[in-house]
Amino acid sequence: MSWSRNTILMKKILIDTDFEDALQNFSATNSGKIKIVITRNTKDFRHSRLKVMTPKEFSTMEA
Image 1 (cartoon, one colour):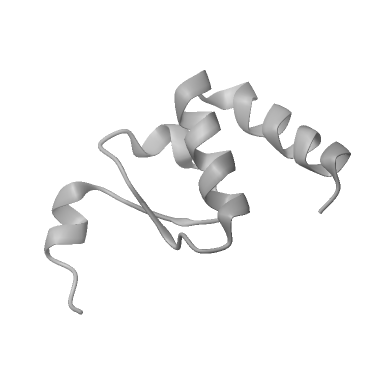
Image 2: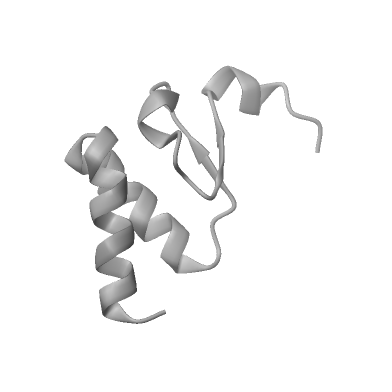
């Protein structure tokens, strides 16, 4: 993925989220290793490519 594509993705994410959540989502997505974001604030991750779960959802997830 080129820097310009990453910049476009980051701007798209920032439109609907606060900066810290957008940065976390961007970093997690580009790590290639993270599959799930666990947060109480799921609305700021609605455009995420990753699976987004609340702590309660994650704690009841089967292994």
